[in-house]
Length: 477
Image (tube, rainbow, N blue to C red; front, side, top):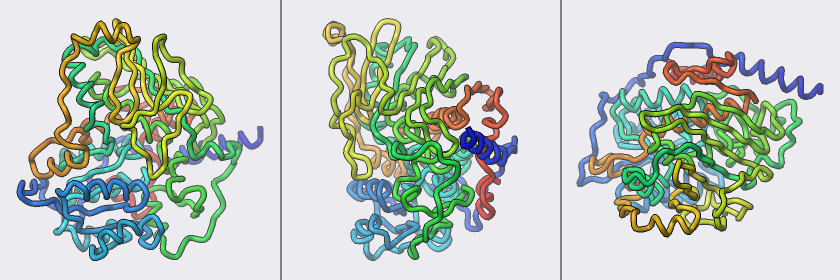
């Protein structure tokens, strides 16, 4: 009981340090800010692209952009240019200028950059994106957009203010999943959705952690090549610990990552959220939190989101499941759960078969659907109903471009991005509200119009996050 009480006190101490500012801050304006309304690149030119984050996932998206043939790589930026995980990209572009701090990169090269990729830990998406947009640069940022509700709100406003092209990196939004859902919705095949189940029940990094911890991991020596201060960015100080935070371990912690939902929700909930026009929920219930603690994510979570009626669409309940022992029931006639080849590997790892693989079930008043993650398409279940419906299904157009091509072509004015901040922002804010329910362990009642939590003052302050470290607060002003 003593450790639980200490954990509770620590959480309250951290939470009450959060910003209580109720007004929307002004945008930061760098010294060499571009004129709002960034010009599109000529359709005959390539996009001059700077890569911010070139190891692990950042390196993977960098290689995808390079493969398009639509861009010139003009700058590399990473907090550790001598780390093992950054060497492949450096070897691919040995003569490209390198930087450890994105701010110094913009100070020196802003005039030579058209667009940037942001493939860094979740907590650093916001300051890098705001800096880039203020310089008039188009931005491709990995999912989720940012770590706090208010950061996402500011990023959406920045997209409009600076007139830049934006894209969040949920690549399935440019594949079969997106075009099928859109066509089936427009044809009236998917309508009157009343319930949705999303699930990701594979092992996660923190499943080996001890949930009884009462403090953050102990300090270790910072590698001489690592700029730890820039890695920390806006968040409050943490001592370096390689096993706890480095090379993807940051996903485990509320201070840095967004857990399973932030990591996979963008690949599972994206189409239902956009095409059913869900917006923001009115209520989030933490139905089940196994080994809840104030430091890192639960071993298993069941979260229930309630969305009101939207026009002629009925109210909808979205239920999210994660954890090895937290497998949702599937409807009769579901069939087998297989690994879909459309689900890519993540940061070099393989998706392992589970009792129920990453995916979704959609329940309407007349039909039931099942689907996977990323670009995986939906199926009508059971098979007997699917056969009856087959003649009524519309033709689904093929994607004219993958997610990376779509961004670059949009920078050229040839296409429009499919996951701009105006669409990806509210989806990412849903994840933020789910995380706050996990973190506090309490139900959240949310006012969609005022964009505030009405039943929990601490959680409402956490919409803004903790006060940023000195020198990083300019991004919120």
